[in-house]
Amino acid sequence: MLILVGLLCFIGGGAGAFLLAHWLARRGKEKAQNEAQEILTCAREQQKEILLQAKEEAVRFRSQAETEAREHYLELSSREKRLTKWEENLEKKNESLDHREKIVSVKEREVEAKKAQLAEIEQKEIKELERASQLSAHEAKNILLQKVEEEANEEKAYILRRVEEELRQEKEQKAQLILAQAMQRCATDVVSEATITTVSLPSDELKGRLIGREGRNIRALEHATGVELIVDDTPEVVTLSSFDPLRREIARSTLEKLIHDGRIHPARIEEMVEKVKKELEGEMQKSGEEAAYRVGVHGLHPEITKLLGRLKYRTSYGQNVLSHSIEVALIAGGIASELGINAQLMRRSGLLHDIGKAIDSEVSGPHAVVGADIVTQYEKSSEVIRGIAEHHNEPEDMSLYGFIIATADAISAARPGARRDTLENYLKRIEALEKVALSFSGVDKAYAIQAGREIRIMVKPDKVDDLGAKKLASELVQRIEQNLQYPGQIKITVIRETRTIDYAK
Image 1 (cartoon, one colour):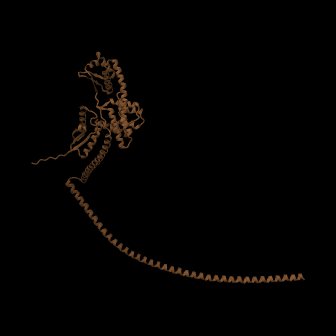
Image 2 (cartoon, one colour; image 1 turned 90 degrees about the horizontal axis):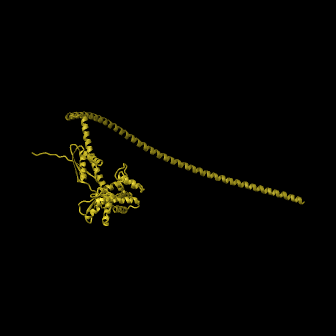
Image 3 (cartoon, helix red, strand yellow; image 1 turned 30 degrees about the vertical axis):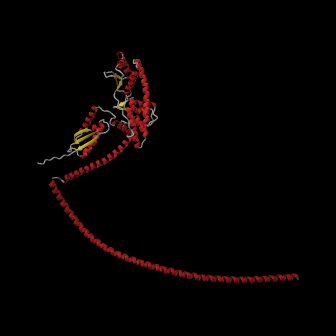
């Protein structure tokens, strides 16, 4: 019974569950159908809206396209009108050009005809000119070209003179400034030495003692010093004669010491000469050091200093060589300072430039080369050595240092009063200068003036023109520089004068 009841309950529950599930399924199906119907209805409405919007957009695009097409059409119409107008204008211009071309063609024919007429007239005039001048056209052309060439040469000569004058003035101003600034720093006194030295005696009685028995004292003194002792009638004076200033100084000092000592005999003379030589060596060393200190040159080798001091007793053309060397050193240093190069090296080279003269009587060769060889043993600076070796313009490739030393050397030597010259040498130099000037063609007269510092030349005006006068001056300068020896510089003045003379009757 219970099983039956349970079975019935199970069957009833299953049926109820089936009916419930069937009802729920049916209910869900109806709901899904309703939702699908709603979705479909919504989609249809959206489709209608989209189609409506698309139609509106198409209408708008069509309207815009029609508007743009209408505007493009109007623009094309306007361009077509302008092109038509341009074509009309071009046709008018072509017609005008054709008309002008015809006029130009007519005028060209007229010009050609006139050219032919002018050529014919020109030929007639040329023939008439040839007949009147008795010259052919080629000859007349050559004459005209020659005249033009002469005028061009004159103009060239004028421009050349003007440019050279400007350059000369600028060069002189610059050179004068440099040399003046260099020379104003130097105020060296030049000592003029002679070949004789006089020694004063307390009394004439000493002359006999100096001569000695049978002249043995005087012979001993001359043999020891190499100096000639002259005892003449001059009261209380004896004369020492020698070309070597150093020997004269040794003899003078020895003689004075002997006079002061009173003992005069050959043995004492030899002893005193040796003593004076040693003292003089010390004096030369001191003089060399003082000279180096004066120009600001330091570190010289003692042998160089000794040779430098020896120049104190050496003269050249009456000019003391040591004083001259000091002056050259100061001038060379001043020039170097103005040019912006090492003034210390130039002062050193200027001080030692004549060092070869200290031993030029002992060795052969130019003193510039000898001096350079000596300094090379103790000096490392090539500039100093080149300045010494080149100061007389002996090498072909002269350096700036040699040129500066040569310039300073010439300034010191050419200064008035620095050197003495004999009347004979002066007259020979004047005569040679005038002779060189008269050797040129076209020179009428030549006069050396200003003690040979200037030469004035009178040329024949019919043989030498203005351009030739300029050329003559340049050639004369070269000839003088090559063939003559002279102090300082020589001014060349060429005078070309034309005189016209007539008489009133």
